Length: 115
Length: 112
Image (cartoon, rainbow over all chains, first blue to last red):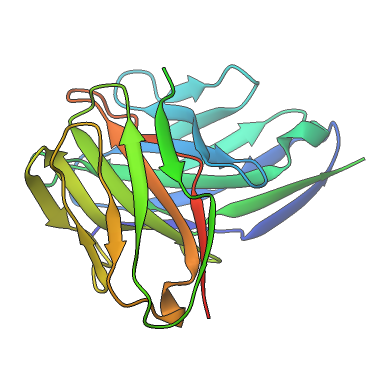
């Protein structure tokens, strides 16, 4: 069975510091990988995705994630965080399932950026 | 486009009451799904639909019913609410051939 593990439930960090949110997955088949962000009292928004091709993917607001097949990881990084990055981040994998690609989510990592 | 809309935003029920959470999308997406979000557990799939008239169970379907009579709408019914169904519920949709799911703003449900 497929699963997603987010290794940190909470990550506190100071503004302008770098951050890494870790995500590992298990799957016996090829998967698509996603990071979603949830700002307080809002729904989920897609941050970035890996479908194929280059293993390093970037978002428009400075986040990047690297797909590492051998380590089955898809860690999210940002070299310098802002207060506005405070949110909960969810890693997810999509696996084929009878024509519908189900999303399996990790438990989430709460990023708290302090001034 | 409004995207994915959900109503109501908040709801309080008593144990045993029934209600329907509404979800609609205006993107002509084939796939729609319902998730519940609980602290420390991420989002878990309740039910999903691959098109009008076709639904299937997800990871945690017990206590919930769905139907899909139109492409646009995918309501979630709680027939007899239980405190264990206190959660935040998200509806999502996805177009065929795309892998990104678009999420609604959520419904926060409390069952007393």
